[in-house]
Length: 622
Image (spheres, rainbow, N blue to C red):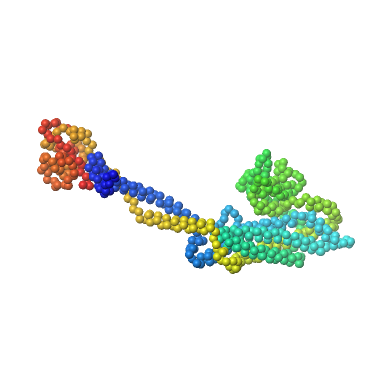
């Protein structure tokens, strides 16, 4: 047909005529040919699309949702909008302020579960690092007693004092209060560093405008540095206020009368709270490979002991170490190690664990190390002093008089100093976070919300600030194009799912009515008589659709009549059935001699019987 350049309509018509007229395909004509193939393929394609649409729709929706957050900041900005840069600047500054405040104050939405935020780290500085720095000042007991004895002797001079001098107490207290300046200033420096890190983290969304991000970081960091000096001045002022007047009438101050009872009270208090748990957590014990290697254990620190277990259920205890005569020591981190290490050792040179003189404990971060050190300080385990300081203390300790009266005075002043310094420490612990929050953190938040925009306008040209990097512009265009393509795809899929009508595949052709004839083909059948044989009752086989019945066909067969074809006259010429449309066939064919339902038997041959050819089955399409 292609070579002959036949028209497609004519080719389809010829194809249909072929299947209708061919004996092997006429009963399958409706399931053969190009139209049926087209219908079946279309049905299969429709079913496949219908099955895959839900998964494709959910995948597109998830991609659109992931892009929604990134496109949110600039999906409404049009390049041809003259106010686009102004809108972008305002939105970026507002977003920066919101992100900074969320990092400091905390937020319930979009919580980071992998890292601590700036506010959480500042909270640890307030309540773990700063108290740790304060507690470190309290462990130098020998040095403090030596200073008290020197103060008492210098106040008495050449005279022999009968009473404990008040001036010695005041001098020692002021010297201890002055020592508070260092941990307070260190706390401010730590908070400033976390604030600057928070600012840099909050400006990550300004990456699309490099100049704007750089200028924003510079302005805010400069403001934080300015507030740094003011905050330090205010904290030093607080310490100077404490130095200006020693209030011995404070309600928590023990007074001279109760100073002698302080030691006994402390000992009783320590005996009452032996099982108080100070801290729990995972630590790694660093042991040489020959002795088992490093292992992680669950540690429980109480007021009297350090225990470690196999896991946090605390059922299988591995060891319990008393805290008597223990001290802490810093250990340098190994070259290939990523953990931070500190050690516990016995001051009397005894083995701490098995045959080890010290136990090395490792944490993942330096913050965890500092937190554990602060917990050990609360339990009475203090850091090790430098070696030269120990030597100086031992050499000077020999010069201290062993006068019993002086020892009693030193003990009295020591208890008074301990009581008053505890009051000062409590006050400083309370005022330091408040001062830093007011003068530095809250002031920085107000500056970002109210003054940052004005500083940005005065810093330079707005156009230069809002210049996008080439990479960011390309990324923005790609994201916007992908975003709109996903939305359009979802719209198209929605239309398909609502307008497509799926019809089931046509059922198979019912060919049960075809008689499976075991007689030879019509061409080889011997000539039969022109007269019809007698009709048998339809008791052997049921009704079967087939060729048209004879004139006296019993209605029990129920087969539809088939119109006669032109040919020689037969016994059915007198049939009263109405004429039916003719089926194209050979002109010499006549109705069959045997009615349907008669067993297939070949009658005896007759010499004058003409050959009868069975007609083809009728087609409902004709």
